[in-house]
Length: 379
Image (cartoon, rainbow, N blue to C red; front, side, top):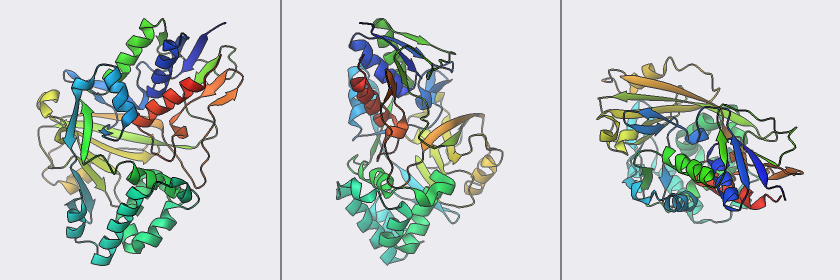
């Protein structure tokens, strides 16, 4: 029996699927159109280490990625750091890490705060996501959080993430965003040296098992006679792009790691001081920052630093900066979202983060999808 298989795309899902199939005796060839591996987890050199082009961290509940890290012998590099989250609203930064911070938040009345707190507890405890799939997040959150709580906290997230689709997004997606993070105990995980090490280790093992990874190579999938797994964008899904600006500075701008920017006039959705999670010594004693948003992947970033200076007037400016653009970074999960199939033809399969639902896409579920499709492939 011919056990050759072609995989299109060397993102995390493609690499995991390729590794699992190579363990089963398949002769794997992975075709990657870019000059590096890792996909949305892809990295670049900064100082003597690697850093992701888009911000990444994991939660203690992320059992798939944690299991893979252990299997690849990288557990000693996985460090857990206290989560430090803030919210920028109406010209001011507010700590936003729990019930006490919510109660101290001046921009909401007490009733709105109580409703927001009760909704969070409810969604964390409720395990039945299916009942949320037929209602939009806008409808549900307005009803249970109230107009004020929804407008200040949740509408900026939905608009910033999904733009013109914000009022069509399934509440199941927002349920999962809250529910799946409930048991992470306020800690975030990061690999010393960057998550690129996962992609590199997977590539090493695929090659050791007789597989190949061909960079700067595109393969025509639909006309292929070779059994093929396609891990790029799916025809039946819709996507939004994303842009990330990474920069370094000797200035420490904030005591927080993650900043939600809840301002409808902001060009960015979030601001991340990466070196409030990871020691700046890993990056030549410089602070590393991300600014990111969704939407048009070709949008201008010219005014991003001007906006950042409004938040932090003492900010001098970046020492180094990099701009990374992702054409398909977020799938649009409307109400009654249907997960695309894995097998779509004779010896033709597909796996992409558009099959992650109700959870939000990320490294943990990219690993899960790679495992799943590897189990579906039969030649």
